[in-house]
Image 1 (tube, helix red, strand yellow):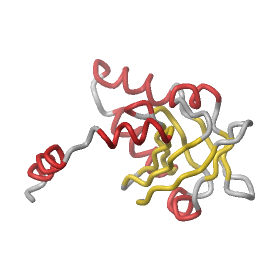
Image 2 (cartoon, helix red, strand yellow):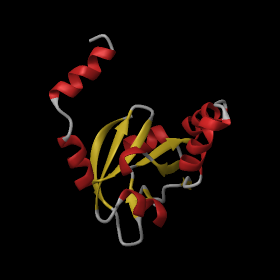
Image 3 (spheres, helix red, strand yellow):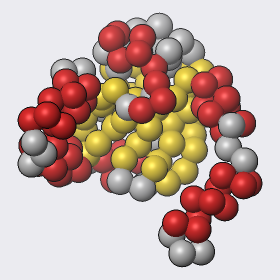
Length: 138
């Protein structure tokens, strides 16, 4: 999954998920808290993989991850217009008010408040990207 899309969340908390991303996510998917105060969106298959990997960790490491990801997770099914209802607790966590950026990040989708997304990107520098690329052997 890839790409960046700008949308508005409506007063009822519904958000349009772009068709290209919905194709990869499937007919229903899971939305949960993500890092950096955004939301993570997983296909059912990717969610199962995440759940399995977390369950294989020792309890001392898995408990916090289980509480963070699973307690706030919501099953979402797009309506006929491609919108999903983002639960209030998740909207509050991510600060979603109106302008939202939906991005494809390889194996998941992320949902960001647009102002927060712009701030996050302004903190990235060519040097920090080059340093990360070195870890990949580039």
